[in-house]
Image (cartoon, rainbow, N blue to C red; front, side, top):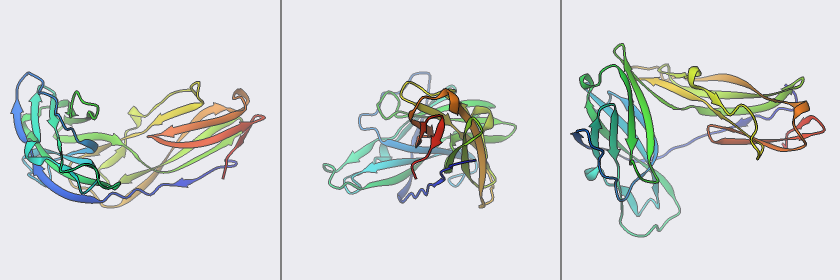
Length: 256
């Protein structure tokens, strides 16, 4: 690799409060949309720590103005309709946003007993029908439960090998239960009119006991040919993270 750039990304999340809530309902109808939807950061599925007999969604919520907004846990609801699970997570604003801080709260929501979820794929729709709708999926099969999420990116290196423009992506896995979901990695296949190339790398996480070791794995992609790109700036977007490089006279240039 020539003229490569390595960017290390460190992510830090402060959990301000942890709670348990949720009212379970069922039926064929879709519940009404929540009027004050929370901004969802992530959804993780497991049988722990609430109860080994229940399937629980651990929902991380982004809080805007940490002293004026909080999760309305008492009015969090769950409605199961076939293979779709609707979860409404509202927030309460005690006053206008009075800080610029962004914090996080988490709420544990029981989706139902583990036995009621037969083998298949299920979709969790949080705050459906709102601008803050968040969709997550999980699978049940062979006695195991797994769910997909965006891979954590530990580093991105762009360079060339001959005429090939390559991207090496370091994926950070949090323990033995998490693996790269290679079958569902997707790319845009080419640069769009704005010079952007997108790559989506998911992982699969299995419920149950896991090691605490953090692993680092590399996924590599050829995203173009030097002799086919015009002079200018190009952007590679990997799980929402942008890295920019330039092409000048069929040469790759990184701005270090």
